[in-house]
Amino acid sequence: MAKIDTLKVFSGIRSTSLAKGICKHIGVELGLAETLLFPDSEVLVKVNEDVRGRDCFVVLSTCPPVNDNLMELLIYIDCLKRASAGQVIAVIPYFGYARQDRKNEGRTPITAKMIANLITAAGCDRVLAIDLHAAQLQGFFDIPVDHLSASTIFLEHFESRREELGDLCVVSPDVGNVKVAEKIADLLNADLAIINKRRISGSEVKQRNLIGDVSGKTVLFFDDMISTASTVVTAAEFVMERGAKRVLTAATHPVLCGSACEKLAKSPIEQIICANTIDRGSDLDVQAKLGDKYLELNVDNLLGDAILRIHNKRSVSELLRRTAGTKR
Ligand code: R5P
Image (cartoon, rainbow, N blue to C red; front, side, top):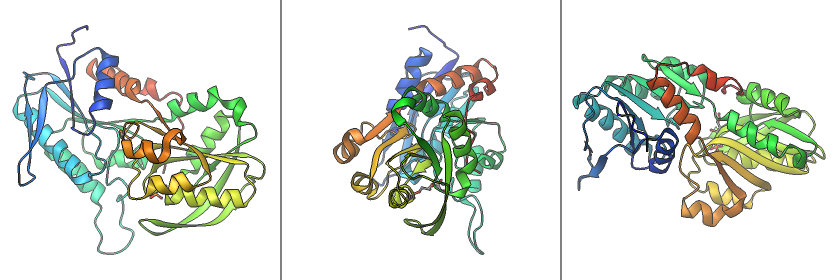
């Protein structure tokens, strides 16, 4: 394996398989470190090799358990900084708390901003992320953010099976995602439809109107994440009632919390395609409940290329040439 001694890649305990894939692509060994839990659940991160002056990339999705992962990330950054790392770059494939990005009502926090402050205060020099819930989250960090989109990978996937998808309609499951869905529809030479969704609670949504025609078509939903799966499952039922022939859904982040897998398994959705920003492909529960219905696309190479570019002080924009943008 070629040795790039000035670059180190470390991994959070729940992001190891993605970090290993990135290392394989770059041609480096995963950095030597360990995360230990004290009996009272405090976290200790210990780096077991010299990092002085190196660019240290910490791959860690702040997925569920969100607070544990977040603490591990903050402690990792502090540990590397105190070990005299050159730059510490947080590679956050999935950024938890991203949906708490504004005050929807009085006396509520903007937690996404507070988390960005914490990451910066811990000593992070730069962030590398994929499909943040909204593009403007980049501005929450007072340090540079390289923001990638997995839509390149999704597009390649759907282009390779374009013929099989037949008369295709890309449907945005809510108005926030229209721009992304529109771009994907254009690139796949498909129609576009939009659902007007209303969120009733964290786990309950209601579809109100459909703008566009899905009758007799293959519907492809595209969203940034599937969390409780309420959005996509109710949207799938909604389009089936309006004459859709089949439904597939694509989303970057497979948060899949609570009873999401059961809901998806029972739903009319034929296939769920996500990226491995959160490791669900090897999750036995997901495998047992969704089996072949679940397909995970790989962002290892995309992140690996971005890491190499950051390390070599080259532009990351080239990796964004053919993307559908981000939810607004
Ligand atoms: C909403 O703005 C998001 O982009 C997703 O549509 C939503 O968060 C998915 O959540 P759930 O799967 O819980 O409906």
